[in-house]
Image (cartoon, rainbow, N blue to C red; front, side, top):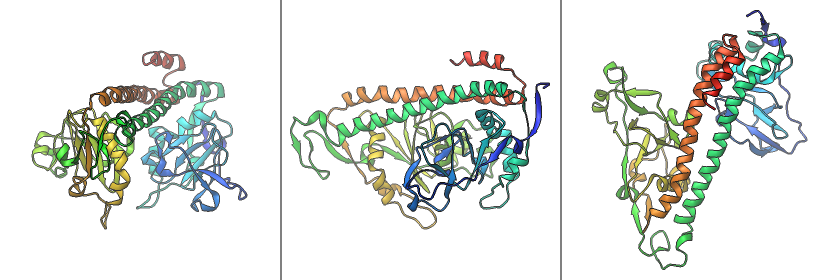
Length: 409
């Protein structure tokens, strides 16, 4: 640690409170709800005059942006080359580097230990938050040399950049999958030259059929074993999803769940086991989060799970859900939280195609690539999470980290 020294973070950064110019007509707004552990959705382009009152903090290239509200939810990101007038909610702390490598600053202040430090310094019960002064007064051990900081940040940044690229590719692939679905099941492009017949959904190709979703496939609910009975949870091996598993990852394919239950827990609850490559949809509070499970699993009661079959593939069901999501949300109700009931959902209509084989052949490679990219990202994340605490504490040097990187390249 001879090359490393203890610094007060406030001497190395500035907590940026610069606000957007009032004569600006349009802003690119980033809210906490669109941020997830290092990444954020495309900013919402809105008129400044119509923006929420909390849309004030002007962001710049190289800023580290951390939610000051419930930091344990890991709503943070590093900003690269933002659009002009990119603005964040006042619920973020904006860290602008002065005497520290920008991306190294990001890793120093968003690793698990530092996030736990921020969490421990929160006040308030309903929405615990920290004062940005907590960051300024905190101390960190870092290399004296900015070049050394940059070398560390380059290694970790290369991993994050590859993860981000895969996510961008997957977004494009999902758009392609939806375009193919609409061409087949909405516009009937491959069948335009054939005969059409009337149906309750309008004209459809001859030989096709309109069915209730509950008649077409198996639709399942879920359940929660009693949390007070440790035998239902301890050493559990059955994947058990709650809605936060989906909202945290926002991933089309799911590799794991935060909690697992035992066989006894499955038997003593209304949770239902379903096969791999089913389609899960959250049905209450947050409605419409979707994922495809890669392993046999079950869910709590906040889901409707669609089990595909030979006629109704998971690819068609994915497109069908997206196509009907506005209607699903409009039919949800409830006083405590909104929910789409299973009874209402099971009345939805779906088209049974006359020949599904060609649609399957076109769609499968797209979904396979999405899945492969997510599997690769899982390996990249594991590598980054292994290297990050060791690199930023000086326990492993850059050359050793580069050797580790070769294993996943």
